[in-house]
Amino acid sequence: MYNKVKEFAREGLSIRQISRKTGMDRVTVRKFLRMTDEEFSAFLALQKRRLRKLQPYEQFVKDRVTDYPDCSATQVEDWLKEHHPDFPEVTTRTIYSFVQWIRKTYDLPKPKGTPRAYHPVEQLPYGEQAQVDFGEYWMASADEHNVKVHFMIMLLSRSRRKFVSFSQQPITTRFVLEAHEQAFAFFEGIPHTLVYDQDSTIVSDENRGAILYTEAFRKYLLHRSLKIHLCRKSDPESKGKIEAGVKYVKYNFLPGRRFVNLEVLNQEALLWLERTANAKEHATTRLIPEAEWQVEKQHLRPFEPLPYPISGPVGKEYHVRKDNTISYRGNFYSLPVGTYAGPGTLVVLEVRQNTLCLYAHDGRLLANHPIKSGKGTVVVNNHHRRDTSAKRRELQDSLKPLFTNQEQAELFLESIHNRYPRYSRDQFLHVRNTISGCRQKLIDEALAYCVDHHLFSSGEFHDILHHYRKREEKQSHPTVSNTFRPKTRRSDLNRMLSFVPDSSTITTYETIFSC
Image 1 (cartoon, rainbow, N blue to C red):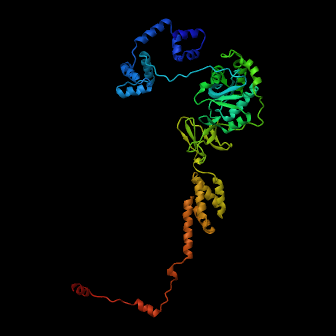
Image 2 (image 1 turned 60 degrees about the horizontal axis):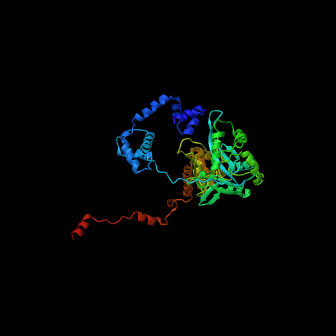
Image 3 (image 1 turned 30 degrees about the horizontal axis):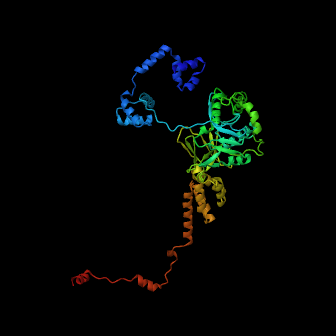
């Protein structure tokens, strides 16, 4: 490996390129390049003599790996801590290196699954198939900030002619459809079959071969009459041509290029396709894609632009959770109550600078939130906790005509809102229910009393109005003591008042008890 590193360096390869070719860390590559042959020989001798930190646990680890050949280094670490209370503090990487050394020294490789059998793919007819895939890449911008770009690449399977289109936003259905139209115009025709992964922008669900496409993509397929072939989940190797194309964009076009803006990047990509990607001899076919395309385009279906503009969500679709939130980069953002309408509920997410905008599919804005850093944060808009269909201001304005003094009513209602901003709607509904069926005079008296004494709440207004109603009822129904007049003659009344009941002495009761 040392000799290979030196050889690559003599050929003019950079440290990063040597690291990629050899699989070594760049720090190790740099260290080897600084060494002379004598220093490297001394280094090897030292490596043979040096003791490893975990040498005392060699037999234990060997026995464990022998008994459980598919165990991981993390499991070995846990076993060491469990069976050896005095186990020293070492890094996980140290344990991993020690386990790998044990496997190599005692020939204990980790068992592998059944190897996949590959076979060559027959050459497809001209115009028969194109493959589509997506990728992303971090680019340095002019102000030294990193910018993440997303792209879609389409490749004609026979001629290997490529087209690529870039976006700053995460891949959306709308971007996919627009990129398809640009690719068909670039190829001057439409292939009969398109090969995709099961990407969420085109497939909403799949059940053992039964494919459910997204609504916008389904309509597009009907208009273009495209035949679709979807790869199985987690099986990118079944479309190796386009996978190689994605790597070609990442490792040939994008490295060392600065991001200015999206328009410049797409223009640079077209120039790169013209002078390099489609102009150089293909490594597999040994043919030039541009020359082969001159033959293939005669077998493509004719391309005519769509008679209508492509519609669809401006952002990426996200699933709504049961608690009316969406998950975005490890944090959760709230939506209005009632947004969740069962499994499969989707909203459209768009990022504008540092703000997250969430839309319904009809374009209606549902919520916007500042984007939070970190993970696990729940960002909640308090207006989403309740149904705000009856707007607070409309409800407040509907209460004012129920009072005679409009100035006092405005002051009273506005003071309630300022005192209870989160519950002003509930306060106004309570006021409306309290007023219902009450005389106007009592309503105005209760309002005047509340304003004079600075009682700004629906509960206090209710108590004052209830007091006035009770007082009015008491005045309209006099007490019995004021209206009762006994119809008895005065002589009889005097006799009744002067009546003295008979009384007995104590000796009478003593005689009765002694009998």
